[in-house]
Length: 244
Image (cartoon, rainbow, N blue to C red):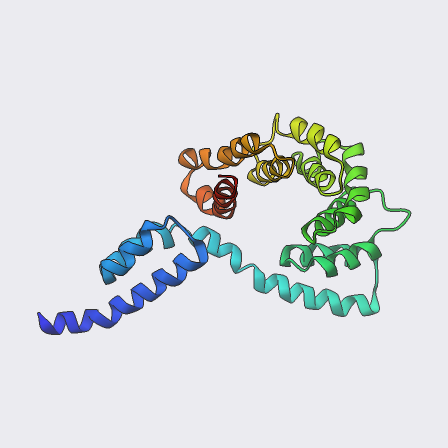
């Protein structure tokens, strides 16, 4: 029996280490940390079965990073010989996925010309500017997209435009557009941005309502969506705490 415990002991520590690393990265419900710590290897094993293994679908997405970065290197080299709009736009899209928003904007600038009639590069350049906090620069691109197609990208373009209005001193436009978008959209991103706008306008009760709507979606979500939405749950919880 003692030898069995001896053999299991290092594996229990390894399981705990794996579980804690996953907990820190994914931030599930806090009670899991106590289960991992107080129940040792068994608690870690339960955590891995309930939380880590179902996360495999999300982990598969992370493996796309490597072929994406390889393609980025290929395009960076190709552009030296063939600086076409198509190459620049594809490279910009990849930079946007990587979170390299400044580089993405530079490439979209080169991809967009007077002959460009597609809305997508304008929309994505506006997204990149928004994620950088450069809302003034984002406005013309997002306004162009929404003017031509108010429902572009399942109304995310309109929602981001409302967010840009809210951050450029245009509360009336922001309010009107947020109200229009939230009639249909249930995006946590949109709900959160709207709640932040309301909080900035000192409309705390309304802000709490919209932040709470994000958390109210949680019980009815399938597990994979709940895991994907965790960052928005954390942001909504933090906002509610501040608004108290």
